Picture: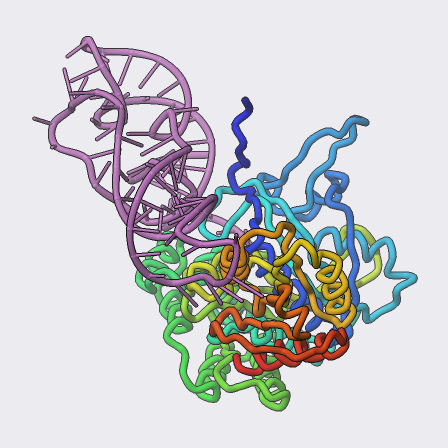
Length: 446
RNA sequence: GUGGUUGUAGCUCAGUUGGUUAGAGCACUAGAUUGUGAUUCUAGGGGUCGCGGGUUCGAGUCCCGUCAGCCACCCCA
C-alpha cells in the first residue's frame, strides 16, 4: 500500500476551503474587470533563462528547475511578474499601451514553509504597463482597496510609501551606495524593535547620526499632514525625494476624492520591499487583526518591466493578492464561512414513487436560476435534513405524497428552522417563484 | 537552506517514575421514531500511537534518524 501524502508546502483543498477560495477569486475577477483589466494566462513552465535572468540569487535558489524530456533546462514560474515581462516583450506590439491585465494563477517556490507560506500558492496579479501617469498609481491603490473591501475584510490597512523618498533620504545622508543594506534593515521596522534595527545598521557600518535619522522614520505616524512635513525635512533638497513626497500626498488626496474611508490607506515610510525593481510607489496591506501574517497584497511601481527581453521601455505599476496567505489568515481568525455546498436548495428525496416529479421540480428550479441538489437516495427524511443543515444549504424542500396530493410544499429555512408552507397547486412556475422569494428573504435577512 | 519546537481516532485532547487487549468528548454509522435536521436513549465502526531504526524482559512513554506542522533567521504572497 502506498501511503497517501502530499509534499511539504503543497496542499489539498477540501470543499469548504475550495469554496471560500473560489469565492475570493470571483471577487478579484469582478473588481479587476470593473477597472478595465483584462485576463491573460501564461505557461507554468518557462525556459530557465527566462526565469533566472533577472532574479537575485535568492529567487534562483527557490526556483523549481529540471531538464524536460527533450533535455531543455526549464523552471516553474515563481511569480507572475517575470512571465508577464516575457509576455509583454513578445506581444506588446499587437496589444498596445497602456495595457491593463490581470492574471490569477499558481506559482511555486522551493523555500521553507510557515503559516501562510507555501511552496505552491496562487497569486492574483494586476498591472498597468506603458504609462507613468500618477492616475495609474492611484488606481492601483484603489483596486487593492476595493478588492479587500469586497472580499468582506472588515479591518485592513494599506500601507504605502515611495521609493524615491527613501532614496532621497539616503542621498542626503550620503548612503546611496549602501542602499540595499539599509533598505533591508529598514524593512524590518514593522516587526523588529527599532533598537535591534539600529544595532543591525551600526554593525553594518552605518554612522550613528544617519541611523538616528533613519530610525526616526519608525516614529513617524499619526496625522498625514505632519508626517508629510517630516518627510519633506528628511529628504532635504533631494529632487527625487521631493517628488516622492509629493506623489504620496497626491495619492492620499486622490483616494479621499474617490471615497476611500480615512485611515484605510496610510503612509508608512518604513515600507521598502525587498524587490529591487521597484522605483516609485510601494504598497503592502495587512489584516489589522493579524499583522504578523505579513502582507496579503503588495506591489508598486517599476521603471522598466521587460528590459531583459526587449528594447521597448515599459514602465508599469501593479500589485498582487496572495490568496492562499489571505485564506490562511481568515481561517485562523474564524472569518471563513464553513459552507460545504454551493447550492441554494436541498430537495429531499422523500418518496420513490415521485422520483420523476422531483426531477421536474429540480429542473424547473435550476431554470429559474437556483442551484439545486436532489438527494440521491430516498433515505429517512430526518437524516437528509441533517445532512442539508450540516452542509449549509439555505433551504430544504420537503414534498411527499401528502404535499403532492394537496399541492403544497414545505420550504425549510435551515438556519432558523422555520417551516414555510408553499401553495403551488401543481404549478411549477408558482413553486419556482415562491422558493426564489424565500431565498431572497433569507439573503436580505443576513 | 540554518536553528528551535511539536506530532496519540475525522476534530480537540487524556495517557501516572517505560509495565497486560491505548481512553474520553465531539463527529460518524445504525436503531428507538416504515413522514421531518441543532434534545434524549441504545448499539456500533474507526488508532501500524507520523514513519524507520535503536536501548530494554517490555517503548505511546527513553535515544537517533526521517517526514510533516509551527516559530525565528533569510526572503516574500
